[in-house]
Length: 302
Image 1 (cartoon, rainbow, N blue to C red):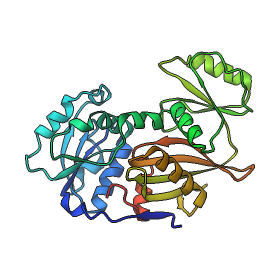
Image 2: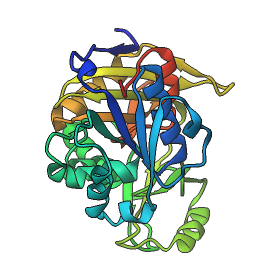
Image 3: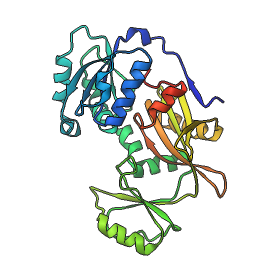
Image 4: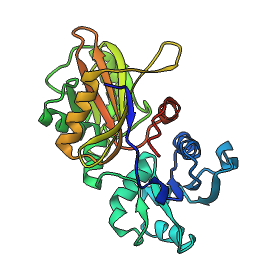
């Protein structure tokens, strides 16, 4: 099985532009690069418009908007943006980061008639996969191997102890934000007392698996994977793309069982004690190392 694969889209030539919506600078840049590499002019909706990508020849209009309007799910935001586009705009609307993908997922059925949007999941499915505790439940139901996990909403530790070390991380979060490895119970208790978990800001305590990280990036069409890339970060920070049947098959099972639609990046880890691949968490949107997959030959935006 190839480590990188994508299927040609016969409708690509009907889309003349892509309208990128992203509030995360690195992901915005990656999407703009991906558009340029497949010869697709783009317009960008963002709250950060001072980066070098703004000066690339294929970048057209930039619509500056405050991030809070996206976070608040302000429905009038898209109306204002689309109102500034020409009536004959032949483009596809592509949300890129977590905030924007969730925003469009919540309002995708109210987009202007004729405005195509990049494949994304429904809002409830996005939340079920992005929320680390909900994803834990989804994976358990499907029977996908994963680390033992507990959800905490107070400073009380779970009665069922996990072997140390353990990982503490927010149920909603990304980019290693709030991620902390704790070596023993005393350190864990001190850390949790500072975090002050609650129902509004729950955390996960998760079994730490010794071994190597491995990731699966994919695009799915209503439960069927149509593009993918399997990658590992090397000691020298380079990204290596490789073949790994078990990694692909776990992603295939998850996508098929959930009927997933859109792009997703799955963080996995190979347990060095038994060689078993565990799925750690899911990111149902574009990802930070997207540019590497693009350079390797799989342009997920295209």
